[in-house]
Length: 416
Image 1 (cartoon, rainbow, N blue to C red):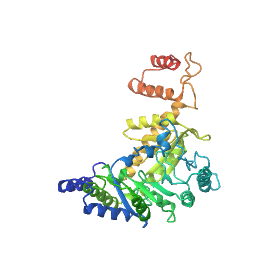
Image 2: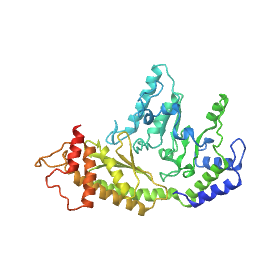
Image 3: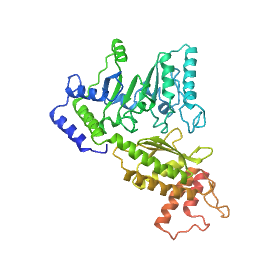
């Protein structure tokens, strides 16, 4: 809801001046917040475990081991008890938008994994996925996918864990939680949430069913978190829920999100670098491609756009397996004016970039010049940055087919 929202600041200050204590001591705020939070969820999701760190960001070996996003950045060693299902990506994945039933096809991949695990003498503990994949590339699963996966997982004795850390609290607009987009017949067994929960204040929570909570408790394992759900954090959380409701931020996500998507789709028709626009509410991804037909990820181009957008005072980042998807997840107070400004800057940067790249030329200088340089796209874009800066600083500097010092230095760098 924006940096330093006055109501959040006031709630934190008021409670901090009154009392803050660890969660061994009961306080009305944690009870009140748990009630308010569970009221946004299906009835069976009624037990809250509050935290403020640790699992909040996955900094546990047990969580790194089950996250391809994490372990593939390290030694890329997948544990034998971990099974990675294909991302249900209908744009670049195994089953695409022209498939008759991509939801069933992707769910059947999970079914195969379960069968293979059983054949190896293993049991299924859990299936975990973001309700919409954010760091995975702004992927929205096809309708019906989660229902089928839940059926297979439950049939194998496992539980379904939905990660709402980045996509919950009304971001999708149409619903308060992203998993709710999949229909009333789909209810996860466990939900993880955090990040927007405290509007920047470190606050997170795991919500589950009474049955799972009792099974956990009866195992003899006690859960305790010194400051998880402390009075100040819960006061902040309550203020956030109030603001979402009072300022209709969920409705704003729908209105501004639809407007932003409309603007971006117009840009897609204009720019060949834009391969796909996907998203809902204020959760949108721009998939940049080198070739619209082959859908080749434009990784270097995405990084170039990010740097140039930053110069225009717009902060974006790229993610996905190829880091070519511009992810747009602004504060929920984002306005139509903000959306228009962002898209205008993006339009200008893509226009300059596409003009510079030309018809996908691989050389910086035409073949008629004596110093043609074959170079990778990363170096091409580095040189493009230099040339744009040069033209702004000194418009009289002309290439005119003559190698400049920058060209010479880059040529030497590429040869070594």
